[in-house]
Length: 277
Image (cartoon, rainbow, N blue to C red; front, side, top):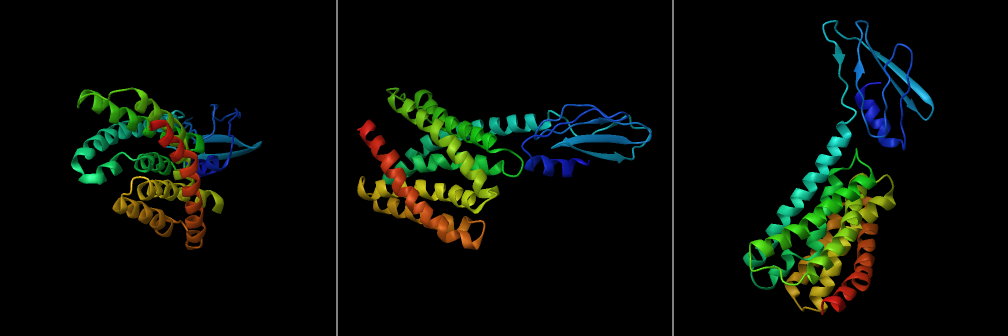
């Protein structure tokens, strides 16, 4: 079976394996992994066992080529590891940038630089970038790496680039929030971009809009920062309208985002205000 169809099939299967066939090539083949086949002058044969069914395909190969390379079985693992590493490094860099942006942005806008909603965006993007070839668990890991990187980058720069981060209370609180929010928004990004059901796509995008709605409530009724509140409200409304995968999903996504905004404020923001008071 060619690599491209094999990738598409394994993306839809929970498990895939390979077995030895006389005259063929034997190699372990796990879900989301590729394999390589050693060729003979007459051709190469890849054998995949999908749900108990064997698919065999022969390929003509030039005799002067000893190996017919279809891809490394460790390729997807390395690709995932690279994605997670990139998410972590991107989070570190963005953490430093948000710390610096507090000094760059005027007035109350400096609160937006390191707000909880803004810090959820990298995890969402990290999950969305894995859509189409990685699992929800992989997207959750990418989101976790991005969020942890943000915390480390922000407080690392505060410690070594400024006057120190002070007490460990806030870093530990934000680290705990990163462990929770990072995987959730990583999966949300994956669902938004490649959700197989309407519910997944709606919830994925509504999570992004909802977290900005939560921040908008805080800016409006707690901090009384009207411009920042309107900015968050704009994201809450525009995200479902502009980013919905299908036109018919805009209204349910917006309604779900409004509900999630209120729920997140009650479950997340109010307890945080109490802890950090």
